Image 1 (cartoon, rainbow, N blue to C red):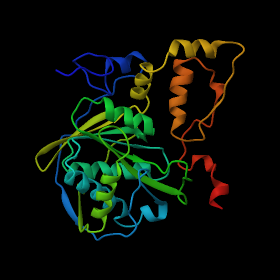
Image 2 (cartoon, rainbow, N blue to C red):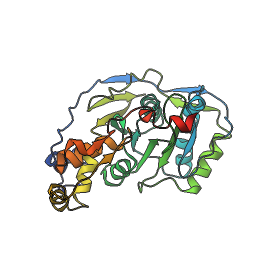
Image 3 (cartoon, rainbow, N blue to C red):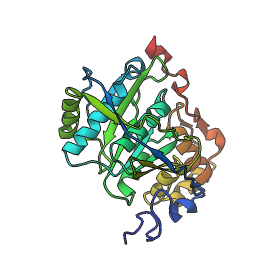
Image 4 (cartoon, helix red, strand yellow):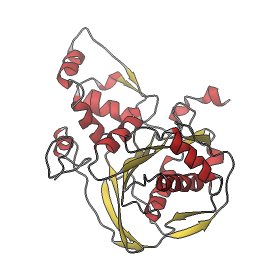
Length: 300
């Protein structure tokens, strides 16, 4: 039996393990909806300009929200992964909290269910930092892995801002050029995509697991604490005791500006809750769909 890479015990699997619990995160509740669903094939046609780089596909929100745009790119990705022999059994989905993340996450989960994925792990409120996604991919114990990350990095957010999707492979890193080339090729010939039209959606604001069957095959989706797993991984990388001692020194002060992005909850959980920094050391650490309008000048 494989050992959990976080706590070295055979009885658990990230993101729900004893190491995660040790740092004070509660274990997610488990609820089963036991809903029988069916997938459907939706007709579409190729959309020009869907060529991703290693940072994924980035466009204006107005482009991503046009009919079939997101779905085409996601299906092209699933098709390319199948062609490359890299279809994931367990998929991670999360993003930087910008406008459109929650809606995109729900659509990707429904499409994953239709494309043969067995288990999707989604960050609470669809939030997962890029390093946190990579950590989940690299340390989850359940078979081939991959991740859709919903981010346009430093680009402006909000309804008039930018949106982006990128795929990370089983090593936790961005899809290499040979995979992104396959994705682009698929976008140029795509005639349909697979989804579950009656998928009821996940309660993204609450941790837990929902179980379904899709055309008789089991499928589950788990909403996880966005921070806990990554914080547990960091415990094995950094000397938290030494950092805590530094933060406690009277001659040391610091300020962390989260810029209303996805890093804010991580800063609060790690710097304040774990390491004892004062709450006053945090600025702008509540995620916002437009990043607190901090990009206004760039959008004008």
